[in-house]
Length: 509
Image (cartoon, rainbow, N blue to C red; front, top):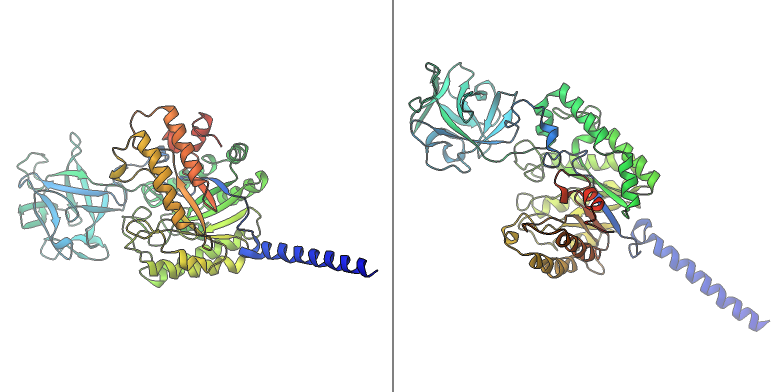
């Protein structure tokens, strides 16, 4: 009996230890085991609920004067003096015409009112206008009637333009230091002797949600965007994703989705219903969903707003508004079993967005997610630009269920311009591997390669080259402790389309 009791007690102790161990393992990271063998193998649904014109350029085809969208930079060279208009001192002063080359101060960013009427914003963010004497200046921080202009193009040579003020007259260059709005347009000629004629050049453009919705206007934009949301990504795509070895989707959205169905102008409603559909399809096909806030109020990088300026984080209001978006999205989907993670913001740009701004927001955003879900992972994007890839590790290590998102492209830098096929392979296997190892620490947050693509700067690469390049990245990025996500599922550029890459046997999973 004594022997039996001892054995029974030993078995009981082992049983309790097993139960305790299992409970601890499950409760670690708020309900999920971060040491599990499960890794996210995802694809980004880019260009769907968050517009990027390069992914599907045809979306913009119906916009009148589509080369005059918000944020487009224009440069004007006077035909009489042969020099460019310039905001003296970058703004807050007069407009002159004395620069032989065009750069920042000589570039005027469009705020579109309609297809022919605009405001022009200068380097220091003031707007071009007309003062009481008819001189052209850039002193106002908010555009009004005096800061509104019409661009009149020469039908025979659209690069030749006149700029008409709301006073009824055209801008003219009287001297290099004197630009006024008092020319009557002459006889309508476009010769080099006319001081109201300029040679116009374009310098940079944006093609996001603000540009497309403001470009079409509220009625057409609502029709175009809803048609796009209903057809670009459909249920069959989720079936395709599941059947090809992927287990998750990362879905970029903009902050205005939280105000659906009546978001602030010029955005239009309907994207939230599409996101609801995505969650239904994900649940049906057993896929995880990572919600990615790709654009925050005021913009955290130069690509997500009206004219390329970065205002996010500079006031508490923008941070507070962004937290409200995270709160809204998490509350809406917290009970859906497909919600796997919430990414608080995508690619904040250093140094305009400081580390203190990011940490302040990430803490508040993390708290907003945890208010509704103890199981959803919270993803924190590393800053782009001159930032230390490890700068968030200590901070995030104190937040259970946190993930650091890094984006790895063999693109967007001159260092890749002349790399050979083998050098690109070596860079992935050596440099990217080392970078990922640096941010992957045993007691730190999980790591996520949230964006990568099997595209590079190599010219005339063979299909076999692309296959090997994709395989190399899959092997290295597969070591990320949270997983990876390819950019993107669909794209007019074939190698950026995972759907095309899979169907054409460039990528094997």
